[in-house]
Every structure is written in C-alpha cells, then in structure tokens.
Image (cartoon, rainbow, N blue to C red; front, side):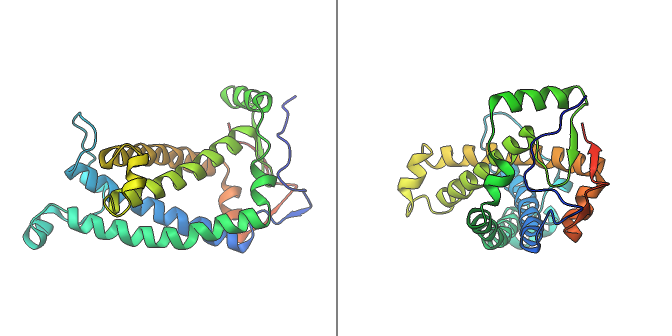
Length: 231
C-alpha cells in the first residue's frame, strides 16, 4: 500500500490550504519570475555568459521586435529587456519579502517544508519514480519539501547575484563573494536555468492535479476529494 507523506498542517473536512496572503504573493512572485526569465534570456542572447553558442528563440524572450528596437535604441532588444528586467524585479522585491516574513512569523515554512530526512526523501523519490506517490492538498512529500527549500534559497542567491551585477563597483564586496562580475553573472544564469526547470516541472504537476490550481485561486479544497496520484 502506498504511504502518504507526513502532513504539513492538520487536515480538516474543509482545508484552508492557501491563505490569501500566500496566494497573492505566490501569483505576484510567479509573474515576476516569468518576466525576469523572459527578459534575462534576451539579455543573455546579446551578452552570453558561457563559452559556447546558445541562443534562446526570440519568441521566448522579452525585449520587443528586434528591428523596432534597432531603430530606436540601436540594439536588438537589450535596452528593452533591461527595462522589463528591472520592472519585474520591482514586483519581486515587493511580493517575495512579504511571503518570507509571513512564512517565518507564522512558522509556515517549518510546518510545510520541515523536517527533510534522507529516509523520507529516498522513500518518496522511489515512490515518485515508480508512479506510486500520492498527493493530498495540505500535505507535502519529502521531494516537494526539498525542491521548495532549494527554490527559496535559489531566489535569495539570485537576488544577491543580481545586485552584484547591477552595482559591481558600489557592491564590490558582494561581487567578490561570487568571484567577480562574471562569476556573479554565471551564478545568476545557472539560477535562472534551475528556476526554469522547476517551473516546467511545477506546471506539469499542477496540470496533472487541477485541484491544486483551483485551491491556489480559491484558497480551499475539500479534504474528501483532494487526494490524487501525481506521479
């Protein structure tokens, strides 16, 4: 019989899985990260950070029509992409700290994401690989907990590396912690790649269990119908 991961919160007949503040900051952060990735890809296309050729299709990036940008800014979208990037960063630094403070003050992070042990991680990873891992709203399995913690840390590292890229002279000590300006750019790029992969998997899993999307919009789901196989 398939085992279900330990609960993140006490289940009830009507699960209030996602408070309003969590839902609002989730969607704002998601929008900001998507805009940051799209504009970041356009920036990377023009100023590559790795040594081999890698070009993201323009339709997947933000920066406007290259010919229009060339006529106005004398580049193929770099300036527009920077404006998108800074605008999205403003949204992120508004919503993400609110989520962090709420999670720490209410101890939501501890209830949902901890503890993570090698035993439960190995058990749930095997269950997921063999399509026997079950999902229930209000519960987090060990694999989910690990990935959420890693994403949280990645966002913090990307924020720090982004500051180092933006102000490498004024924040020279921060840039030095990443091995210099190019080191900060490399860390930023690798973090973006990791977030892109996570978003892809996260969206696929959400589409496989549509109730998770409805719960993230409405904030509640019936405990009697929230259990589904996700992998």
